[in-house]
Length: 581
Image (cartoon, rainbow, N blue to C red):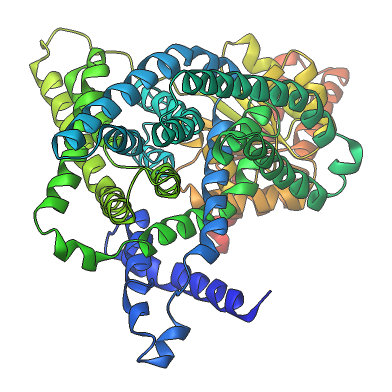
C-alpha cells in the first residue's frame, strides 16, 4: 500500500475511533458526525491550509477521489444487509409499490423540479437533467435513519424502501436519458431506454436463479463448515462479486449487493452472516459519509447567501410533498414522516452530475452548485427525519387520546416466543413440546449439520446457524420480546460462557440452562442463570423413584420423597451464589 494511502487509512481510523464517538457523546447523529468530520478535515476545510501549514497535511484529506472507491463499499455492504433482511416473497409483494409508487415519485418529482429549474432560466434539456438529479434520495442515509427509528420493517418503511429501490433501478435509464438530452436523440432514446430495462431484468433474473442454486449448497458444504475463515471469505466474495457483475452489466453496485443479500435471506445463515458483515458495513458507511462531506465547499455558500438555502429548503419541501401525496392512504402523519425521510438528495446525484458535465449538458459551475445542494440536504436529513418522527408520534398520541374509553385498542405486535440455544436431542425435545402447545420458538445451533437436518424436517425456517452466546445474534432473534432463552448445549464451558455473556447484556432476561451435574449447575447459577436443570440430578431422581417403587413404597410416597430431595438440591444450588457473595 502506498504511504499516502496508508496515511489516509490511519487518519480515517483515528477519526472514526476517537472523534466520532466524542460527537456521539454530544448526542450528534453518527452520520451527521461523519459528514461534519469530512467537511472539516477535507480539502475544502482545514485541508485547504495545508500548503501554508505543512503539518496539516498529516491530519487532513487532500484527495477525495482516492477514497471514493472505498466509500462505495459502504453502500455495497449496506445494501447487502438490507437484502438479508428481506425475503424474496416479501420483495415480490413490494412490486406494486416499486413500479407504481416508486416510478410515480421519480417521474413527478423530476417533472416538478425540472419545471422550477426551467422557470429559473435553464434550457429545457438542462432543466430535465436537474430534475432527474434531484429526484433521487440517498438509500444509505434513508435506510440508516429508518433503522435508527425502527421503522424499516413497518408499512411506512416498506413503502419508503420500495421507492428507494426504484430509484436504484432508475440510475442507468437516467444516465441514458441524460446522454439523449445532450445529444438531442429522439426516437433512438426510447429504444435505448427499453433495451436498458430489458437488460437489467435479464441480468437480475439470471444472477438470482444461478446464485440461489450455488450459494447455499456451497456455504453448507463440509469443507466450509470446518473452516470459519473460508465461510467469511465466501460471504465477502458473494457480496462483492455479484455487485461487480451488476456493475459490469451497466447496473449499480448497490443493486447487485441487494441481490446478493436476497440469496441468503430466509436461509439458516442469515443472522450469522449479518453479524460477520456488520463491522465492515459500519466502518465503510462512515467512510462514505466522510467522502460526501469532503466534497462540500462551504465557501461557495457565501456566493449564494439566499439562493442556496432556498434551493435546499425547496428540494426538501417538493420531495416531501410528492411522497406525502403518494402515500396519503397511510394517513397524513405517517405519509409526511415518509416525505421528510426521503426529502434529501442522494449519492447517485454525484454520478449523474459528473455525466451531465462530461456531455456538456450542465456547466461545471451549475454542477458544483447542485452538488452543494445535494450534500447540504443530506446533512439536514437526520434533523428532517427526526421532525417527521416527532410529528407522527404526536399525531398517534392524539389519536389515542381521542379514542373512546370503552373502545379496544389495536392489537400490538405479538411476542412471547422462546429462544432455544442448541438444537441437539434436548433442544429438539423442547421444540416438540412447545409445538404441541402452540408456543412459538426460534433456535440457534453452531453445528451446521444439525441445522441443515432440522431445516429439512418440520422445524423448517425456525432454526438458524450461529452461536447462542452472542448477544447481537439473540437481539436479531427478538430476545427483547422473548419470554425466555433456554440453553441446551452439551459443552459445559460453552453453556457457562453463554450464560455470562447474555446476563451482562440482558440483566432482566429469563435464562434457563441445562447443567451436567451439581457443580456445573452451581457455576451456571453464579454466572446469572435464572433456572438450572441438572442432568445428573434429574436422571438420578427418576431412577431413585423407580427403585423406591420396586422396594414396596407407594407411587405417591415415592413421588413425595423424590420431590423433597429435588427441592433440597435446588435450594443448595440457589443458595450457592448468595453464600459465595
